[in-house]
Amino acid sequence: MASEPPENDIRSKWQNQPNETTRMSIEEIRQKAWKLQRKARREVLVLYGFALLFVVFFGMSFVKANDTLSRAGFALMVVSALYFPYQAQKRLWPRSESTESASTTGLDFYRRELERRRDYWRHIWGLLGPLFFSSGVVLLAVLKAMKNPGLWLNLLPFTLLLAIWAASFIPLRKRELRKIQREIDTVDALRS
Image 1: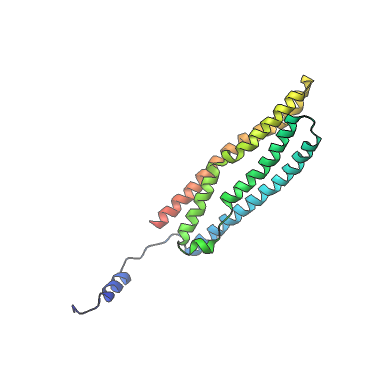
Image 2: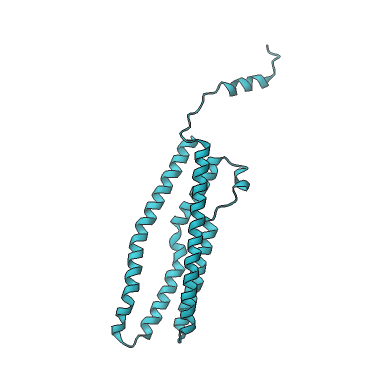
C-alpha cells in the first residue's frame, strides 16, 4: 500500500474532516451585504440632495452679501457643502463586488464593507469640520454686521437647531458605531 499516491490520502482527510455548523447561510450574508450597500448609496444620495439645497441657499446668500467676510463665509459654506458628500461618497459608496469578491469570501467582503462604514462614522467629525468652520465664519460676519444688539434674537432659532442637531447626532453616532462593531464581532465569530 506504500505505492498508493498521496492524492488519495489528502482526499480522505478532506472528506473526513468535521463539519462546521454555520449559523448564517451564504445567502443571508450576501443579503446583508447588499442591504448595507443599498443603505450606503441611499445615504450618499441624500447627502448630495442636502448639498444641492445648501449650494442654492448659500449661493444666493453669497450673491446678496455686501461685505467681504460674509462673501467668504458663504463661499466656504458652498465649498463645504460639496466637500462633505464627495468625501462620504469616497468612503461609503460600495465598491464593485465583482472585483473584490474574486479574491475574498463573502464574509471577508461583508466585513470589509462594515469596516469602511465604521471608519466613516469614526472620522465623521473630520468631514464635518469644514462645514462647522464655514458656519463660524458666517456667524462672525453676521455678528459683526449687526448694528442693533436686539438682532441677536434672530440667530436664536439657528443656534437652537444647531444645538439640538449636535445633541442628537452624538448619541446617534455612538449607537451606530456600537451596532457596526457588534456586526463585525458576529462576522469574526462566524469566521472562526
